Image 1 (cartoon, rainbow, N blue to C red):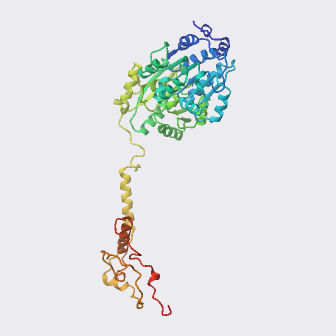
Image 2 (image 1 turned 30 degrees about the vertical axis):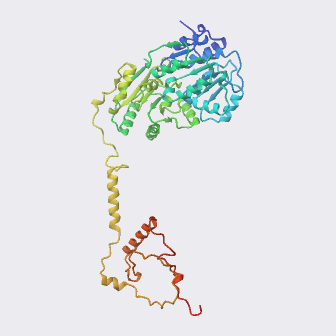
Image 3 (image 1 turned 45 degrees about the vertical axis):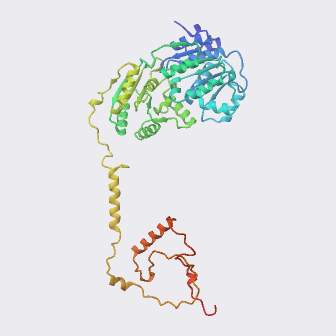
Length: 505
């Protein structure tokens, strides 16, 4: 049986591996480490949870024992799709490189540029980063990539899904052509194969399991549910409660909004639960993962940011609240359980609208997944929601309630006046005798005759309807400037200009 001592690793690395409690390499490690030590390009394909990270960390530590990095010129570069994966690789270098005096720099978002710059100024033997943050430092003139000897592209299929391929192509052009490239992925779709052919030179291909296969230690089951979110949440709670041996579990959703909604729902029902998605700041994400590892929370509701490569070795259950849209994501999700030879269980809630995605998953993994309690055709009729009968936002009932509210307001208004003209005349104020106007020259300039009929204000009865009508007409003319431009004061003459001149004046 092959041991780590047979792979050609240095004594310092072997000592650290032994202290970590490992003696027998996994198939991907046994296949990738020897050619990597020979400085050959590697194309490694293995299902998640098989130790791909150590497949490039251990040979890199051996190769880096000779030499020293210069300021702002890293010797090796490791690209990861997410911050969590990058931080996890950095932890592996700390664990296996404890006997080395190597400078490891971690460049990820959510961390101060100044702190990262100070690490780069000391020189980085190992630079671990996400593509976006690396390009930010390069554009600021803080990095020179001409000294990179080894390039590692980890989780390449996830890089493709997240749209990082153009960034990786830009980065590859900054690195010497004579570099050694280590390329790892859990799945190998045609797009990734084309990418590998472009970046790798005569690579050693190590394929220790069928691409897109799932671990045999994971028991997979499907659970039928209705499309309504409250039905799916109810089904999920029942399945969780039915697991007598549930220690901890990750619950995956397709959207970040669904992560937040499901987290609040489970929290209201008394579950020990946390949430993890891409919109959270880095400190919150790191704290949440650590709390889950330490057992402070039992359930972790997450988006696919937690599906790829995270080292959570003792996860007992995985629940897919949503069927993943991309079939490859199913392999990564359920790969969070059943790791390192442990047994695990994976449950996927399926609705009628998920049939297409389920077919793609079963075709990808080349096996039929069993239903837990009958398939979708055996579902009973949808249960009435406890909110049925209440008006929901945006529903027709709400519109009818609004109409009924207007009717109630209309009924409360005072009734319209039904007084006769004679009664109106009786309440009209008595006319005030006006003094004879003085002979003054008209201050009103000549203007074209207004075609609108002039009304005598003294003859207008105190009818609010007339006032409203006049106000609407005024607003109409205020809002439309296409009429003739008025000269002088127009019809509105200030009151002080109508004062009768006194004899002394």
